[in-house]
Length: 85
Image (tube, rainbow, N blue to C red; front, side, top):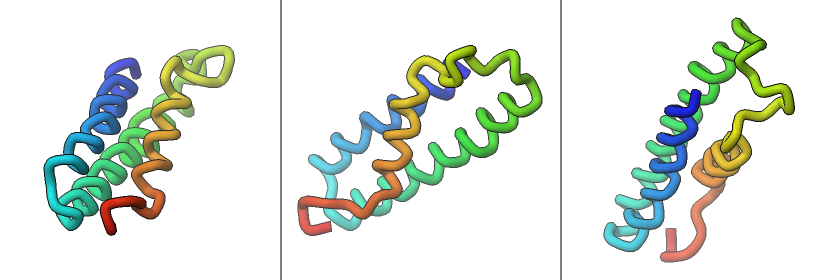
């Protein structure tokens, strides 16, 4: 689980680099791909894991960093702003 949260943070952080160094079209495509990857991690890995093994889910209901993971996922799925995209 920690690895999924770490990777999501890295993917989310890579968005700014791509925005700064690539064309608006490349940025939009990359952003969509990252959103799909993060969605798959949440829906296909973390959620089923928590459903099958509820004891792995933190007692507070959130894994450390999960809030940032979800916020990053939502950010990737939201309509892009700036740079004319």
